[in-house]
Amino acid sequence: MTTFDALSADKLRADLGSVVIGRDIDVLNETTSTNDSVLERALPITPEGLVVFAERQTAGRGQRNNSWESATGKGLWFSILLRPKIDIGASSQLAEWAARTVADTISKEFGLRTTVKLPNDVMVAEKKIAGVLVEMRAQKSARHIAIVGIGVNVNHRAEDFSEELRARAISLAMALDRSAKGRIRCGEEVDRHEFAIALLRNLDRSYRDAFAR
Image: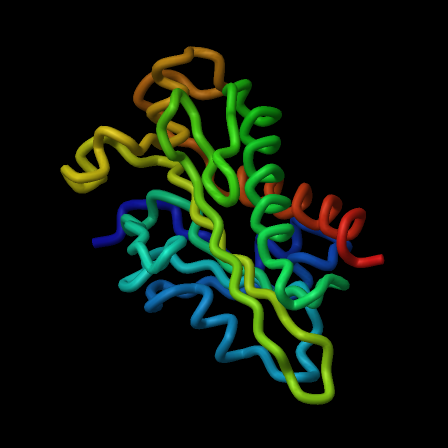
């Protein structure tokens, strides 16, 4: 039985207001990977800004074909369809932009010290809290597309990670328990909806400044 507070596409869309990233949002209960789900919807006429969230990924991907663990309802797993004004071979620029925006949002919202391990990892207390995967595709008679996949560990506890990852992964809830600087008390959970709104707004603003002109 589902015990987490599921994300709502309608509520996310309503609370975002006027944006490019998040102009269209879908939330899936399960998918192979959100990057795959966005690619399936990416027609030449599809405007940029589509965001697809999943409560669970069965085949989430990281850099270099590594798998990405996405415990059901514990994190934010989503991908964004973009049409950036950059060369199709410049995906590293997007990966760095997304990673730095995630890191900045975590620092601002929760008072946690973050670092970016280039090109695509966000670290807290020397452990990975988020990652980015960018995939570029050419399209006939349309600007090429970029699919920016982002995964953030939000409400995981140690037992939610595989034994392989426990020594090198962390979540917002775990980091806040340790720091006592966040807006939640020990054992409480981060509001995923509230954090998703803050993150999408920052991604939207910084993307338009850096890539949409």
